[in-house]
Each structure stands twice: as structure tokens, then as C-alpha cells.
Length: 192
Ligand code: HEC
Image (cartoon, rainbow, N blue to C red; front, side, top):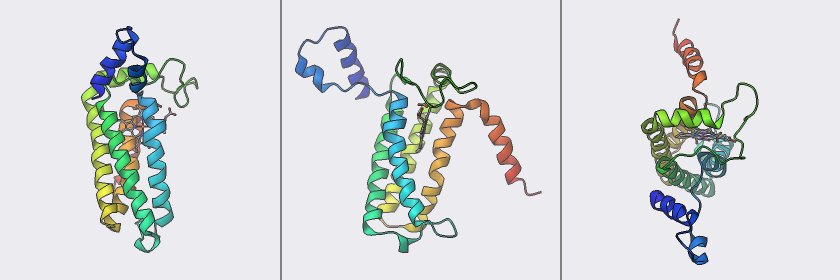
């Protein structure tokens, strides 16, 4: 699907298609930055807001603090996130951002540049796709748990969501921090 749209866009750019009606139908292929800021992060914020309002002292989801409406919203946001993650995985080619559109912290000394990120993804597109797919699977499971109003399962998936985001960010956004984060985690898990 995305591939087809890509070719349609390419044809339009080449002037192969003259009907303005057809042009209007073709949505531009989103950049990774647009997917993050307009789709993935928007749903994540909604999911976390629902979770934060219903997390109890033991950091699990308290079913007494959930309403029929919040369960439904959790399900719907998770379903949208799953669809967005599928789209993220299918981006072909993956373009980090458009010329002139800055990503977070771009220009700050030491912050990753779009070109650097583009390079990391080009080196390992299969890993990029598998991490986008992992987000899709996680979001589908969360939607299922919300549908069943399964608080323990939804709570665990809610708590695990940021880890799924972070794994990809560490791999492709700021991999230079990966060794540092792994060292900190190893220390935290060290029983001594
Ligand atoms: C398959 C990889 C991948 C996954 C999964 C992923 N991201 Fe990202 N994300 C990136 C990359 C690469 C960047 C850096 C490019 C950029 O900043 O736009 C990024 C950047 C961002 C940004 C900064 C956007 C900006 O202003 O530049 C936010 C916010 C974000 N991600 C949120 C999330 C959240 C929330 C999740 C999980 C629910 C998530 N991401 C999952 C790859 C991923």
C-alpha cells in the first residue's frame, strides 16, 4: 500500500499524472518524524494519561479507578497506535524528516542529527522494522487487555510501553548512549 502511494507520488512529481482530482487523493508519505510527533506520541500520551489516573500504590492498574469510558478510550488509543506502528514498519523508504523540518534538539551541541539517524536506519533496516513491529504487537495486546477489562494485564503492558519506545530510540536515535544505559541497567540489576 505504502509502496504504491510512493510510486503515485513519484509519478505526480514527474508530472505523469495531470488530473488535479487524482492529485488531491494522494496523501504524501509521512516522514518518521511526522509519524512520531503526529501519531505515535499523540496516542502514547493519551494511553499514559489514562494509566496515570488509575495507577495504584503498587504501580499496577486499579480497576476501581477505571470507568467504562476510560477502558474504551484505552482500547481505541491502543488500536490506533497499533495501526500507526504498522505504518511505521511499512515506511519504504524511511525518511527521517523533510528538509527544513527540525527534529527534537536538532542544532543543540551533541544532539543527534537527522542525517546520523538516517545512517543508523540504513545500516539496519530489518532491526528498525522488527522494533516497529514489536510496538504494534505490544499495542494490540494492550487493546485486547482493555477490551477484556483485564487490569493486571493492561497495567503490566502500560508499564512496559515506554520500554518498547526506548529500545528503538536507543538503537536509532541516540545509539551513543546505549552502552551507558546498559551499564546503568546492569548495575541496577546486580544483586550485590
Ligand atoms: C521503530 C523505531 C521507533 C519506535 C518503536 C518508536 N520511536 Fe520514537 N523515534 C524514533 C526515531 C528514530 C526518532 C528520532 C527522529 C525524530 O526525532 O523525529 C524518534 C523520535 C521520537 C520523538 C521526538 C520527536 C521530535 O520532536 O523530534 C518522540 C516524542 C517519540 N519518538 C515518541 C515515541 C513514543 C512515545 C514511542 C512509543 C510509544 C516511540 N517513539 C516509538 C524511532 C522510534
